[in-house]
Length: 415
Length: 177
Image 1 (cartoon, rainbow over the protein chains, first blue to last red):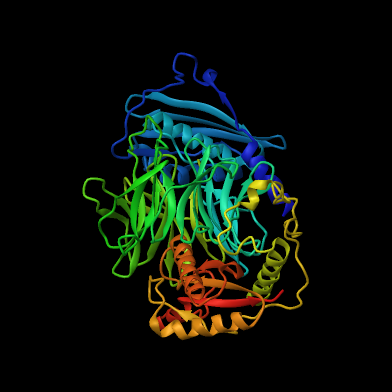
Image 2 (image 1 turned 60 degrees about the vertical axis):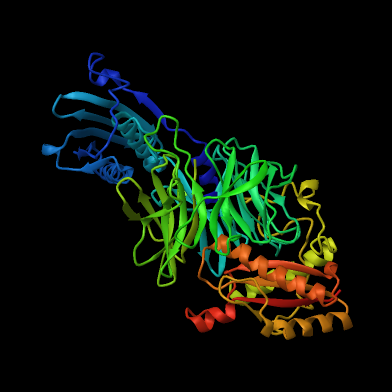
């Protein structure tokens, strides 16, 4: 356990050394900032692989292909017919690995990207994720997600523990060993902390864990329910659900757990807050209308505004926070119940209607946005077993992440 | 760890929480014990072990409170309203508490349909509805605490309406001091 924790810290704090290899091609053809073009459809991309150590080259190629596929910006194609073609080399010894990669636009013979990446042998996946994000950034102008992480609830030996993994489902690290119920993780904007709901001391309390130091602290343990904690975009405030005043209501507090302010005053139940990208408003669930729907309130309180109208049951909103230069607009993803099945949808602000984005025979729930505002991770439950899936809302493609033994749920995509 | 053992661990911890912190969970106390800083640093994840959290040390397993002393109060789907048919069960709980010492924990539970966090709020509303009914029946609110398990602890692990009907419930656990 200690070993895996140390690894997590190293992954969290380490840095991939990136060396720009202008000399490879001569300064005349190297371009640090190749032309950025906005991607509407997918580019066809040919991965020719890497020369050098065959075992390393095979792994690097596999990780790169998976990253490019998951990015949503590329369709992998034979090298002969692809718009962009990759070539490269790898070498490795006891000091680590070096991956050199070049991407060329075939029609123009223009080099779009040429870089070398260096890391320890154990960092191979992370090195390739960095390369993949550079390819996405260079060819699409958009932020990639290959270096992000996902926290989730791991059903494990009759308990629920928190775990963190890479966005592609690899490098799973267990975060809690409480043999209790630890649920609903949410990241701080800097990716350093996770707040969650813990039954470690029997009652549901809000705890925070620092991923760098392993320190945990209790942020809210009022009488009754303490849950649903979520950081504001600036990381200074936390919105959460408390029942200390006789009913589950929304509150905010500062990141130290003090300066508590009550936002809602209803006889219904309020839960599941999520902050707007500008940090001025909070969307949440209330069944004040008789059925659970998504409402919005100013961060300082005031009159709530009902957002969703149909379908008749909407819970678990998550507001996307795309980067300023993104092609994506902020969106509110929710879980809807339609015909007894749960599906993931996106709220349409004009009509109040939620449009399904992941609706199939399974129960799809608990969507959480990637920092690119384009991808979601969600829980798919089939035959009463839950696993995590990624969804690209531009292409509507779903990808199952590697199976987590025992089951995974309540994912939270990190910054 | 078996489910039973896990549950016992929870219960042991629960007694401890009641005994060691008095009745801060009961009634409408507004203070946040966390903000005092008494638990500002607990064992870290990697270095922690299972030593528990300082302010509420674990005690021995003697005197575990029993579930099932009172029949569970059942609810309709997606509802926290006390059905008229369940009133007599609450009257029995109130009569016991008026005649005996001890504190009461009201547990709110949901069936497995519905999202996890929404069910946590719904389970709490069920527990609070039962607590408020007991207050009306003359039980001091300061003797009662609520805990919502959402859909985490079904009474029946089946996946049909028979099981779900049993799982939408409040359970009552008496903790003697």
